Length: 293
Length: 225
Image 1 (cartoon, each protein chain N blue to C red):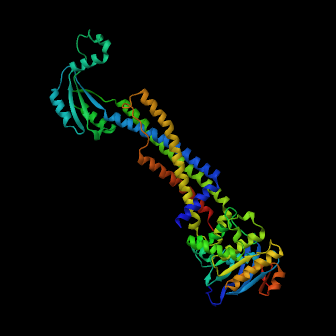
Image 2: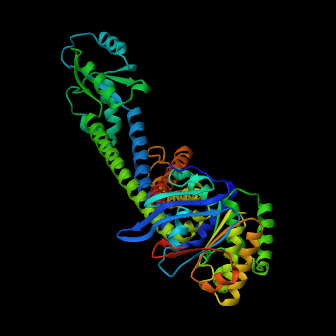
Image 3: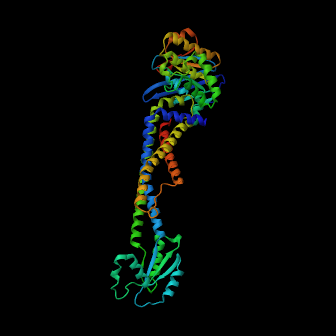
């Protein structure tokens, strides 16, 4: 019986090639747009995560008179939760670093009568806590130590990027929801057209004693096939520009600095399954209406 | 509420009314058709013949009254059981109602696919029935390529392939010439002789007179004899 349902589903698809093509194309375009958004979001999120992992907190000490010995301050910071390591950077080391960075313009620093740079601590954070909220908390705690003058961790940039990402996520949900409803609606209407073209056949099947299940299951299978094909085509269409962009980025930047990736296998399969679900749902809604006695 | 009652009756109607808005299609119809009976339902166009047949296979619902088919009260049957009721019938229509995108074989096989028969059984049974109606040579043809008489023969084959208890035929010879009409009638007679109950709605009084079967006369929705 199952093979009969599949056979009837395939026959149904082949009988209405144009209509089926329109439905599958609709799926493909919806998947393409939503997944393009999702792909950008995943890679931006990955970038954000990798950036957060490299974050160091710089705690600059008061230059003139330390209220506490640096060793005491270091001990205090080391005891704080989420701290992996603390390294003291003396003002002399800091000046030497700056000279190295400035390279040919290092001579600008030659005329300085005294070293303007303060002593500092470079604080590394444990991997599990490399999230903006925890970083901010830790920075606040370090700032509260009396000898610490200033704390720096790229807060402004991190906050901005995090806000943009959150906005992106929200927009993604809204866009995804809209496209989901639009695709279900279009699929349902396409199925309704297909059902209408088969209304005589369906009527005859009912008259000879076919159950609703016997009539519906091949259409459900059609919906699943449309969803699967549409999803595959949409993802394939997305992969082509992605590959082009990825190749260009590898040539322009270091791929280690800005790695981008396509969907992992589990996400890929998840998208196909979602697409199939939308196909089935469109069929279900149309058939429910069409087959009411 | 009426129960199954008399075992020799396969169709019983009790004071059945059917109206479509203000139009009264059937008025107070009461009848009793026995098993293995051959019955004509006669009347002019608009008398209510098609309506009466439709009510039997629940193609429509009564406005009032009750119908018992093979012991089942149609007023009480759950929606899910309607397909199983319809499998008791083999229905033949004036306009054949064959699926134009399926072959002769596929049209008939559909009846047996619905009842979950094996492929082997379906092939054997369909070919046997097509032999009976003389259409085995057109097994792979599509209905639009067949004449009216040939299509009706295929429709008859489809109606009988599931060994139904009752064959309902709504003007089966309405679109056919005299020779084709007789061929169709002969087939129906064959199945009657094999034990089926046959109910034919027709306005062809010549056919009715020649065959000397039971007759129910309908006029303006009422059974007159």
